[in-house]
Image (cartoon, rainbow, N blue to C red):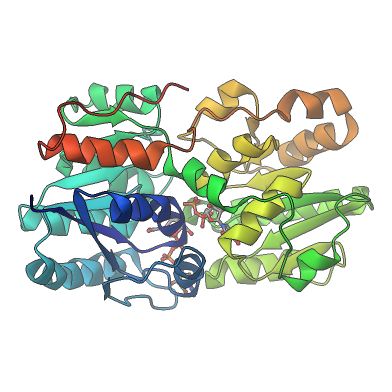
Length: 382
Ligand code: UD1
Ligand code: UDP
C-alpha cells in the first residue's frame, strides 16, 4: 500500500526540538514517508538542533534575517512553502505550536488544500497580545487544521470551547519524548563555562528570557532581579544561555555583563541544555518549552511572565508565575534559596505534559485519519 507522505514544517529552535522525536517516529513507521521542510526562521539555533538529532531537511528556505519583522517571516515562509508544496505534493502537513512559521505553514498547506496536523494544539491565554504574536498564531492555526494533537485534557477543552471537536486527540507533549532522548547521568558537558561549574559545592540557577512581549522594561526588570540576587547570594552561579536576538543580547550584556558569577553564554545545544536543567538548582525563565521540560526533572521553575498558557505545572506545584516585576521575582527566588521546605515543596518530578510516548500516539492518529488503522491512540492520561 502507498505510504502516507507527511511533510513536517518548522523553523525555530523549540519547534525543531519538539518535532525531532516525531520525525524519527514517522521515519520508523511502515505506513508513513517523512519529508522535512525548514523555513529556517532561526539559523544557528535551528542547526544546533538538527545536528544533535541528525535531521537532514529535504527543503530549506533559509529565510532568517537579523532583526527580522513578523511580516517578513510570514511572507517569505508563505512564498517558499508554496513552491515546496507544488514539488513535494504531501498528503499531510504537520506544523507545531505558535510561531510565525507555524501559521505560515498551515496557511500555505490550506492554499494547496492539503490537510494540516497541528502538534501542541489548544494552548491559550485568551490575551491576543500576550504571548505576542503566538496566541493569534495558534488560534488561526487551530482554525485551519484538520488534526489537532492536544498535549493535555485542558488543551482539548480549550479547542472544544472554540467549536473544534473533530480530529482532536490528547497525546501529551513531544518535548517529554525529546528529554528522554537527551538526559544521561554520565553526560559530559562540552561547553567550557559548564565544565567549570561546581554543581555539588554551589547552587546553579539557569536563566533564559527572550519573549517579544518582554522586550523593554520587563526584560530590564528581570535582569535587575538577577543582578540583585547575585549580590545577595555569593554561593549562587547564574547561567544564562542568551538567545541570539540582538535585542535580548544587548539587554543581557548591558545589565548582567562583567559579573564572575553570572555566566552569559552562547545558546546551548539541546543535549547540553537538558543535562544542565537536570543538574541545576532552580530555573528562571520566560520560555514555554522549559516550563514543560523542568517538571520531568524535578526542578522548580519561576516563570518570568505575567501569564502562562501552561497552568498544569502550576497546579502540579512545580512551577510558579513570578511576573516581570523585580521585587516579586526576587522575593520568590529568595524563598527558594532560604527555605528548604519551600524548595522541597516544588522540587518533585511529576510531569503533567507527557510520558515520552507522544510521537507514537501522533503517528497512530495519522494512520487512523488515513484509514490505516481502525482506532486512534488511547489518550494520554496525566
Ligand atoms: C521565535 C518565535 C517565538 C519562539 C522563539 C523561540 C515568532 C514570532 N516567534 O521568536 O514564538 O518562542 O522563536 O526561540 O515566530 N537570531 C539569530 N540566529 C538564530 C535565531 C535568531 O541571529 O539562530 C536572531 C535574528 O536577528 C532574528 C532574531 O534573532 O531576526 C529574532 O528571531 P525571530 O525568529 O524573529 O524571533 P524569536 O524572538 O526568536
Ligand atoms: N534550549 C536549548 N538551548 C538553549 C536554550 C533553550 O536547547 O540555550 C531549548 C530548551 O531546552 C527548550 C527549547 O530550547 O527545549 C525552548 O526554546 P525557546 O526558549 O527558544 O522557545 P520557547 O519554548 O519559549 O518557544
